[in-house]
Length: 105
Image (cartoon, rainbow, N blue to C red):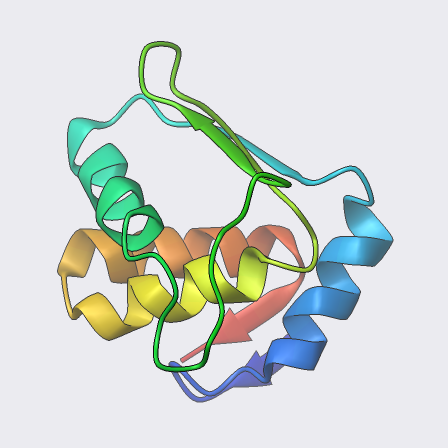
């Protein structure tokens, strides 16, 4: 497991880990309403100050809770979860990173 300070994992590390472990996209099934709100808030930002966005290569369906984030876009979702400052978003970010063998402390 690779360890970074919270919020400091480089985008390229996230991209590489996701591409290696989930080449067809990072799949999630979100059942928790608070986690879904955190994902929706991050998703709906459009193009951000980094000139990046979650595109049609990624998908989220609120009716089923199914989410699939393209490997080239997972870092965008994770950055937005971090920037939200919300506990639920931070927890979700940490959980996602741990599944990719990345730890933030």
